[in-house]
Structure formats: C-alpha cells, structure tokens
Image 1 (cartoon, rainbow, N blue to C red):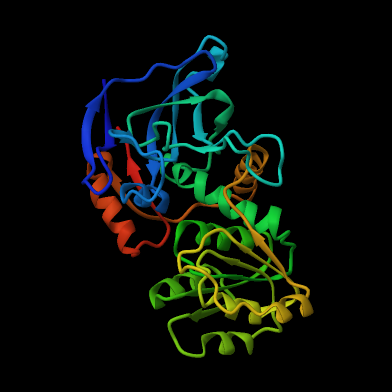
Image 2: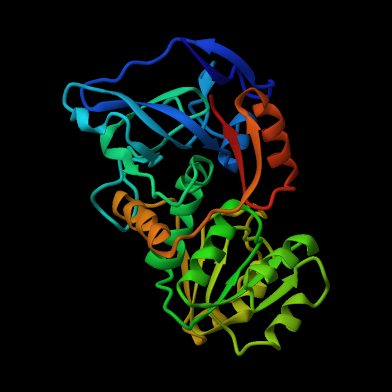
Length: 333
C-alpha cells in the first residue's frame, strides 16, 4: 500500500488516502517519489476543466525520486538512481508538434502526488547533482514549456532583448532564468510590485507593472523593441506586445489565461515582419536538452513553498490564489 492524493470528483476537496502500490510492467519502472510539484494544470483538473477525468485520479505531472523497481525489459542498473520524470509522453518523432495520442502524466495516467509512480523507463533522466529533489521536481512541465518556447520556437540568441510577461508563475520564471543564463538582456512584467522587485534582484534589466496605466509606453521608451517576447496571457494586453516587439521580433505564447485577442492589427504584424509562435510542452529531445542546460548553467529553480503531501489541498489553494513566486512543492515520504 501507499499514500496518495486523490481527486474523488471535480469540485470536491482532495483526499489523502491509502491505495494499492502499483507494480511496473515490462518496460516500466517504479519510482519512489521524493518530491512533486504543482502546475496550474492540476488546479484546472480539480475544477473539471479537462476531459477524461475519472474518479479517484492521482494528479501530478512533476516529480523526482529514486528508482525502486524495474520491469523485466529494463536493466537492473537503474535501481537506486536519482531521477527526474519527463511528463511529456508519446512525443518522440515529429519535432514540430505533438501527435494525436500525446499525453501528459497525471491525466489520464496516475501521476506523481503519491509515494510511488509507474512510468516507462524512457521517460526518466538522471537528476543533476547540484539539484535537491525539491528543485528537481520543480523542473519538468514548466521547465520544458519554457525551454521550447524560448529556444526551439523563438530561437533566442545571446545579446537579444527579451520580455517575459507575467513573471512569477512557474513557466514565466523559468523562461526568465533560462534567458538570463543564455546571456540575453531580460525585461519582465507582472501585476505584483513584490514579484517585480524580486526579478530585479535576480538580474532583470527593466520591469513594468501591467496594472499601471501606460505601462507599455513607458517600457517602450527604455528599449528600441524586444527581439523575443514570451507570453501566457493573450487577451487585450497582447496588442501591447505587438507594439513592443522589434522589427523581425518573435512572440512565443503558451497559454491564453486572459482569453481571446481582440482587434489584432495585421498591418503591424506584417509590416514589422513579426512571427507569432504557439508553443505547448516539448518533445523528448527538448526535455533532455533542458535538463542538460540546467545542469551546465547550474540553474536552481525558484521554490515558493514546500508542503507535506498530506497538505496538498493547502498547496492547491495557494496556487489557485496566484500568490506564488516560483514553484509550489509537495514533499513526499
């Protein structure tokens, strides 16, 4: 048996329960989870905003731990290894987009908010030595999303000017850290003065509070335009990003939390030769490259708060309130 966090049904509080410990199939491993991390995806699932939700679902896409057991087709040498789990499943061939049968760990398959999780061995990568299990667990979904948007889609190069919108959330903060590590000149926006002050201390060249009137015009005075812009909001504010982009700029976006983009001006887009780049998660090679980049640059993910597994509901409430700066972690075991 093992302890796990279960979603009985959407709209109900999470349950901390004892369930049967899973066993690995021939190509699978059993990972003893040391730490797991929350994503907004988990919160949205609890609200019923995803299809295919089943009763007693074990949530969680992000996790790191120790390999405890392996299937018959997996070498025993993996046992005892400290690993990070790639939650992006089934995307191995075409790098341009995910296939129709693509899945993310935690729905429909049981996820990492448990003492043990079963995954195929191909979705494991060794944990960099400089990372704690909590830091390692923070990386997978958000780090992969940020890496693909910033490097694969927007093709960021050293010395370019980058704007990260909504900094403070997991993906945006990783994009900020990755861009700094890649020797870019990085600016950031947020609706929180506290979060803006924190990224200034981390190395931001400039900041803007998008809740203040005229924020985009003020930010535009400090730079001739941004070569790369990373966004997750969409909505009406997206038009300000079009204005802030430099000629030939690339805008990569991985979400639309503020809804549809009204009155998008095609003339500005084609005359400035802009590229609008949708991006979601990433493939197996990008996950490997992301972990290698974090290892080479000795990047430490920003941890907001750590909760024991049995306090998962409090962790979910914190994420739902949008107060976090960095990743919210569940400590397991």
